[in-house]
Image (cartoon, rainbow, N blue to C red):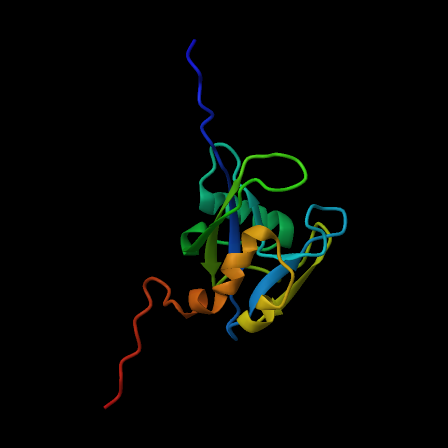
Length: 157
């Protein structure tokens, strides 16, 4: 009899690093009635079947923070994953993280919790879910990258 090997799959999730003009980034604190309650995270969520990552992110952020994002203005920033660890077995998550420097509206939590604006150093001191640990640790380097289409400053002589 042939054995069928289990092929691991992963559930895609998306997140955004909203960057203010002063260089601070938005993190959202999970509400008490949700998984990872009280932890700070990048806003976002699961990609639904048939959705593209950027469109899913715009939808999720509109639902969570009541702001509008233009999917074309989201720049890929980082990838993170977990191994499906937790109290109940599940598929591993793969986080596709994007940066965004322009949005419509003022971010506010629509599903409970709170938002805060942090420097990369401040963010490193916050408790975060497993998927956000590595991106938060690399946040300063992510923010230092020049967005696509932005010219490098010329040296003055």
